[in-house]
Amino acid sequence: MPLIGIMSDFGYQDAYAGIMQGVILKRLPDCRIIDLGQQVPSFSIRSASYLLYTSWGYLPPGSTVLCVVDPGVGSGRRELIAGWEGRYLVAPDNGCISLIERFARIKGSPLSVRRADEDLLEALEEKRPPEATTFDGRDLFAPLAAELADLGFEAVTGKEITPILLDDLETRYSQGESTKQVSGIVQHIDHFGNAVTSIEGRDLSRAGRGKTSKNLQISLNGQKIPLPERLLSSFAEAGKGEPLAYIGSSGFLEIAVGENHAANQLGIRIGDEVVVCL
Image 1 (cartoon, rainbow, N blue to C red):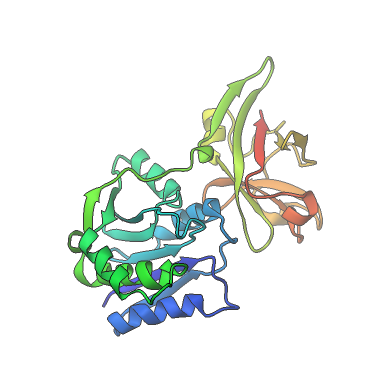
Image 2 (tube, rainbow, N blue to C red):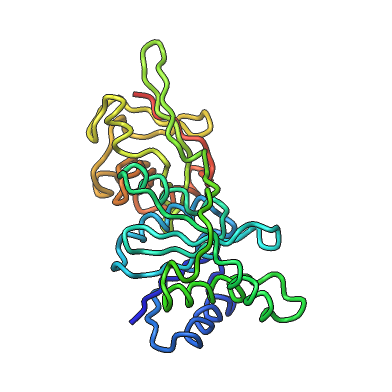
C-alpha cells in the first residue's frame, strides 16, 4: 500500500492541502497519507528545507514525500523528483531539497535528482483547467507524487539535474585574535517560537567546543543575546522568560526562552545571521 507524506505552506484555513490529498486519492484510493505539516511559514524555502530534512528519515522505505512550498509558481522553475535509500521526494526545484542533499552527500550516498518525465509533464499540463496557472500543487505536484508512488522512480523521471541549493545554510568558520567564530543563519522558527539555526552541534565540536562548553557568546545580526555562557541541556534549566541556547533534537543549535516565544521576545526572524564566539 503506497504511503505519501505531504508538507506545504497552505495552512488549514483554505482547502488547498485537502485538495491535493483528494487528487492523490482519486488516482490511488488505497494510498495512506501522512500530514507532515501544512503550516510551513509562508514562502519560506529555508524552513521547508529544514522540516523536510528532519522528517524525511522517519518515514518507512518506499515512502514518497510531496513538498509544495513554491513562491516561484509560474516562473518556469523545474519540477524535481529525488530518490535516496528507497525514499522519494516530489518538490519544486527552489532549494527546499538543500539539507537533504547536503547530508546525503556527507554520508557518501548522494541523492539521485531528476526532472520529472517530459511526456508526463506534458500530459498533466494538458489536463490543467483552462487559464489555471497558480495551483501547481493540485495540477502538477500531487499527480506526480501519485504516479511516483504507484509506478516507481524510473517510470516517472527523466534526465538527471543539478538542483538549486541554498548556499547560506553552509556553516562558516573564522579565527579572531582570541576567539573562534562559527557563523550561520536562523533557518526555522518553530510553533513555540524557538529559533533553529543552521549551526550544528558538531560544528561547535569541530571548532574545539563541546555541548557543555563555557564562555559561549551568541550574536544575532551583530547584537549579543543575553544567554548563559554555556549550552543548556533542557528547557527546565532556564527560568520562565530566560533565554537559553541548546542543541535541539535535530542536532542544530537552537535559541529559546523558558516558557515563552523566543522569536517574539528577542526579535528573531528567519534569515537572521547567527555568530557563535568560542
